[in-house]
Image (cartoon, rainbow, N blue to C red; front, side, top):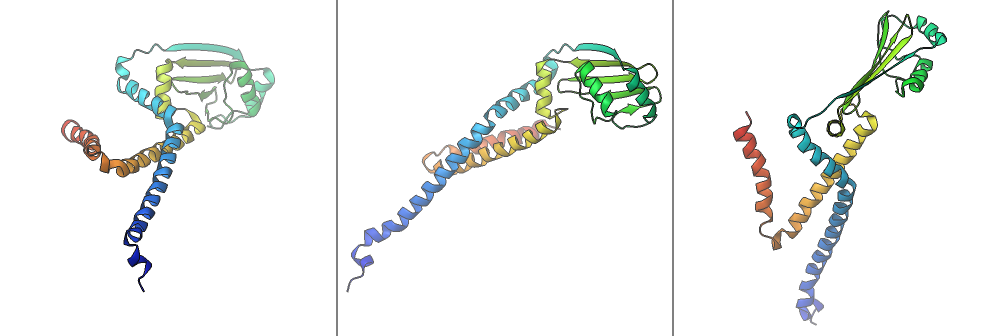
Length: 222
């Protein structure tokens, strides 16, 4: 009796190849899905970080005109009296009632922020992306001064690039964005590998992308 494999050798040989093609097709589909999803998630962020990479690299050539605004107000007597119980030397945040008053008077958030407190004055640093700021309260008179300096949109975006004074939410956004970029790059590498057989220039170009920064670092960075 002749076996089915012996009777149909071409069919038997085609089965492993068909399974291999099906497996390749599955992974190709998965990689394409993860690649375009990660690209969609990180697209705007990549444009932002690429553009601000250029502006950071040429920061000295990009003029910035600092604009400083100052506002004053007087702390109400009941709140000033409450500060008499506040320690003379501390970094504790101002009382919640004082923080609420500052939010109404100056549109600033000082609740929970550390202070530099002395017997004469309470100072709260209020740095922001692309600028700086502070609030002082005279403990004897209640006079409060808020100053804010901004350096324009380029400085603002540059500080977002660096994660400087941008807060916790932006801190985590950078991490999520970085993970999306890694997924985009790794899936791109896998897709290059899957298509490289039909595109002979793939790996030479990839190698060139690695070689150029390595050569620059070795020869020109000392």
